[in-house]
Image 1 (cartoon, rainbow, N blue to C red):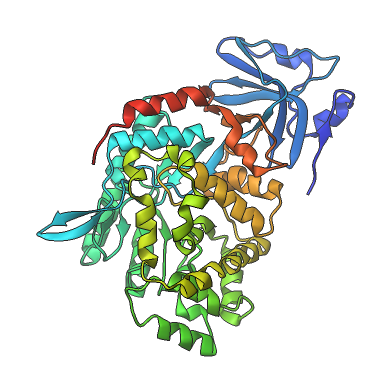
Image 2 (image 1 turned 90 degrees about the vertical axis):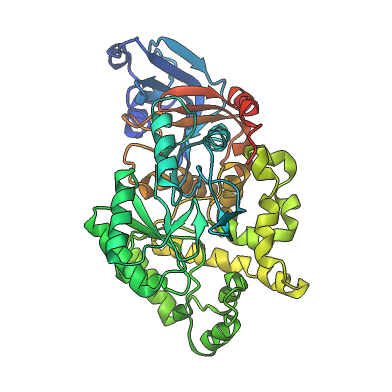
Length: 493
């Protein structure tokens, strides 16, 4: 871990050696055209990708990109720009990236289909717009939706890129492939031809990934991976009884959630005990009981970790999901109401009750046992991280906000430094999504960054002090973004 503090007295030759200092001498600066340029100066630049912290830093932005940057020296002149923004010695870091954001989904509710009640996650454009704005206001400039209505995702991506809907830049998967019927959320084709037709339909709607879900059989998981590859798409999976090892051997591109809950990854008496507990297929206790029995040093787990590292299978563990389930009866403490402005009022009505549903019949002893497994979940994160498995930060929410911060805190508690955590949140997220020009303060990169009152290297809670978000070169005042939410708050579902 390294921190570089560059002050005005440091020689220019040292500055030139730093990747953040691309053009500190006046002749180069004067070559930049003044039209449509913005200079952000008097800033402490924090670049997690290189673990550099530079005081008196500046960025020159043009056409949505960082075109020059450096450190202001006593004997140099700042670039001339059409707009000058004095950061007043505050902190400027790359925009955050949420690699698991269900931006276009609606709240869980029951609707009737063919005379039977089914789960619905149908969204609404006003709901989406609310969550997009609130997410952007918390500093998330880029996101990936690993599931959702592909038409709704396509609509959002089009409107956002056109500048009509403020919010994070979004790439996405479509409806999950899953036997359990979910309105606005799932499909389950009946044969290979129908699978291929649905994959092609989602591809036409701009999906980047096909999402395979936990209710699928091994044969269906294999078919989904093969058909997606044939269509030129990647695959992401949330699995349960089908092992991560099986999916990895087939070449799955991404895995999600810290729930690798297949009995195939357990051994001996632990495996038998776990299977005995899972006789009730409707019980959600497996989300903690698997961690009671797993031995990370066992042969199956060591083989899995080695495979994931060798193949560079990308994973977002969403530790926050495990915590939400284990502590579902303490959500008022974890997420007080004042922090939940990021959720539309329609979501605020029921989100706590929805998360409490899986554990409604757990005894006090079972809740305690579940909560005791959280360190074991975090051990999985650290094992994967240390092995070189590519990880990134996701929330599994419809708006990032406090869930994103909590994910960072849980990651830090797993044994990572603030530098490492912030790297996962920025350049790590960009690598996860295949965005080669995002996630860093670097010349030529997209101008996505946020301005904070406090230093997140000292305390991750500093991320709650963001007051300006710059996305693709366009600056947004957080206060003005929040002011837009009132007009979208009256929707009733």
